[in-house]
Length: 416
Image (cartoon, rainbow, N blue to C red):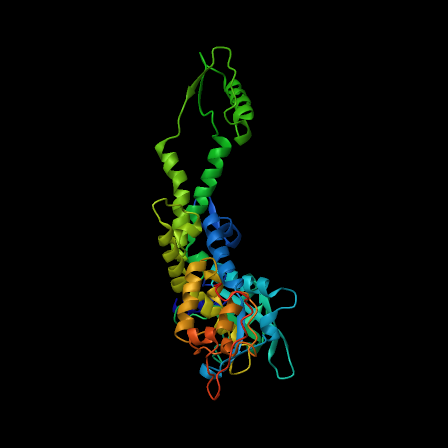
């Protein structure tokens, strides 16, 4: 009995194309039906409006901001032109599309898989082709102890694999799959959508009971029901007048409290899935009239600090690993604050006063042309006092004579 059991266990775990054998759920997390009448998969999950909204928000927030490449740190930090693997990671996709697929794979499936398909003369990556998680499998080789990746059934050299995990558990070579973990929540939301659709498809007003004097034969009852359904079912026939004859009467039935509460649960699913992805309610379309504009601004700041920063670092670390040593990328999220001009200019003013930014850096940040340093030498110096720079009496470090500003061309000396 013991040897028979051992042989069965060994046979179940012998499949080299799955992470831990056939006895373990597939790496893509497609676990099948979890509630009566529902079957959660990647495509069905994306059909849940709240799930779609949450992931597309993250994609837009992380794929659209400018990505910058740097060399060095501290005072030696210098911005440089982006490498080809950053400017266009895959020749068939724009940078925006590639970064969108990167985040969508992480947010929906918990893993991003990529294959390096081209390198330069120094063996630095030039192109990384995104791989659909359905076509990726991972296992650990028992002899070498190394991970083995197969993309669409073909073994890929480990050096050519780019694998990024959103969230993972200790000892697991793959990231946690949101669809597998949230299958109950997604099943409920999916069932609510189906109920919502059927409610307004089949139960559009008028809704009630047809009372017929006497008894009807089963065939006559089916024919009457069919005629009524054809005339009054569906949104296009809602609230159409009904003409009754032959003693038939109509008994109106209003929406039950259970139906109304079930429909309201759709809004709850938006708030619940938004909370799972740590996205503020107003971004998920959950309106609350009691929330003030200042509260929304604080929610936006919390969203950037508590949600975007983590995803942002995953993007930056993954792309930086493809660059030569000493080079790295950063995603500039400052563009998200561009809508609030008052706060933006207050930040510029403080940065200018304490010597963090130069006037030209502020002008460039606002989309303006920098001032000519030959005419305005203080424009590139963060420590130039504001009053002396404006009056032309600022002396640059190392100069013995004051640098005068451009002559005043105003013909009226009393004008300000």
